[in-house]
Image 1 (cartoon, helix red, strand yellow):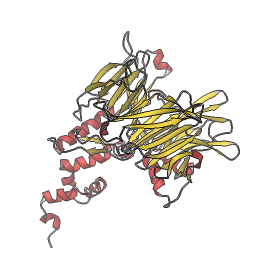
Image 2: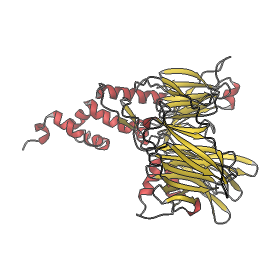
Image 3: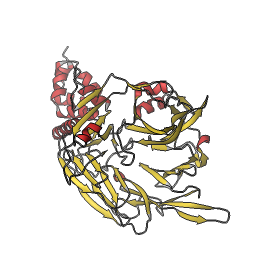
Image 4: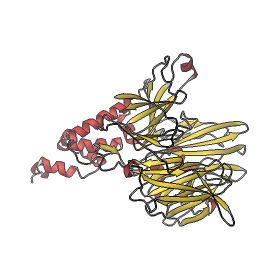
Amino acid sequence: MENILEVLPLELIIQILTFIGYRDLLTCSQVCRLFHTTIEQNALLQYIIELAVSGMQNGPHSVMDHANRLAALRNSQAAWNTLQFTGLKDIRMLQGSLYELYGGVLVQSNHLGGLVFRRLPSHYRGIDEHVWSLDLPDVNLRDFTLDPAQDLLVLIARPLLRTGVHNARMEISIHLRSLTTGKEHPLAIKPPILTHGVDLRAASLTFMAQVHRDHVAVHFISQTAPSELVVWNWKTGQILVNTYSANLMAFTILTERLILVGGFRDVEFNLSQPCLFVVALDSGHSERTEFEEVDYLCAFLYPACYPWVHPLSFLIRSDPSTNWSPHPSFQVPFSIAPGPRLYIVTIWVMQGEETSSIDLFVLSNTLLDRIDSLDEGETRHDFEWSEWGPAGTRMIAQAPHSHVWVCYVFGSKFSSITIRPQETRDGNPGTLEVWDFNQLGIRRDKPRKWLESQDVQWHVGDTSILSSRVFVGKVRTTLPYRVIRRTLPAPSSGVPVFTEAMCSEDSLILVDPKGRNFRVLTF
């Protein structure tokens, strides 16, 4: 009987192999010599594997064939793995006080209250730089966010006092505009304005806003009144979640139907415990509800804190949202795929008169895998630290990142500039670092022999041990990652001194806060 592999045309075998996942392709390559040779030598099959390992997805059809896409992807990954950028450009900060970095677009406010947009270029993905501006004379701008994939600009106006017969409240208007024209977004509710009233006690409000497909979420943060979190469907105006609490300290959108909320809760023996609460957007809390009364889906518990630890603040950073993709008209050969995102959770606590911060690095699939294990209809389930933390996270005291320039994470990468006292004395401003938590890439690229270099440090199989006066007992975490380094040039007269770093899909943005300069490193 003939071997069917000897009968089938090679073109048909390749076509069949394109329908299986990258794991099965790797397995098939070990089955026989024919499969091994076919998979190793076919550009399309290699491209499928490289996309998966890199955490990327294929772009829309264009004149660029699979062989050229594969070459561009490999070159891009090699450049990131060595921080060998292809272009450099210095940009002056504008006189406004607001900025945002999302979807490859860097935005600054100017002294007139308008916004200046800069689409950052990419060498390997063939993106040209483009700069445009919008005047916003009808909006007294307080904050904003954006989603270039939907041409959406979300403008948060300064609060206005609204008086009534029985009470007075501060009203905030949220305008839904086109990112490219500044006009009303055609898919938004009519009129394209969301409104929310807050307590008069909520002085000096700050905002944290996010967009995820049809959802706009805004965290109204106050130091003098309970903070509030509201999630809307921006296309219909429907409120999905409306909750408030002094313990509602941070949030991020986890998936299309889940949000992640950070806060503290009291446990026995006067101990407090940081928690990450997961709330379903269809949980039926569209009416204003105290957060303690919300039927959250589950909570991820940190280790308990000592009685003398006083919680101060919470921050959760991740970018972009889990299912984000560029607009189809944006003809890029490949882009970040839906999948694991790195969340950096920072908590600030006070011990006596000392303030300290602790950072938790966790991938979204660590959380989602546990959420998927819940029984249908189950709520208020607690995942103890031992169930998710030791193997699924890295906890580090005072990781080197800014508390102002907070766009330091993209996909599974974290960027920073480390400045050590010795380097400062020697006239060296520091070292640019990228911490890579892409687990597939780490497994493939980790040297077979344990090799360390000045430029790459592997944290695979080791343990971070946090011994502090914050948590009861030592905290051990083991999530693998690698650190890629590049020494910054020594400063000279008139040259910017960069102390912070931000990260986007094709760029690292160095920040010189004192001299008010950006430096865009393009990949």
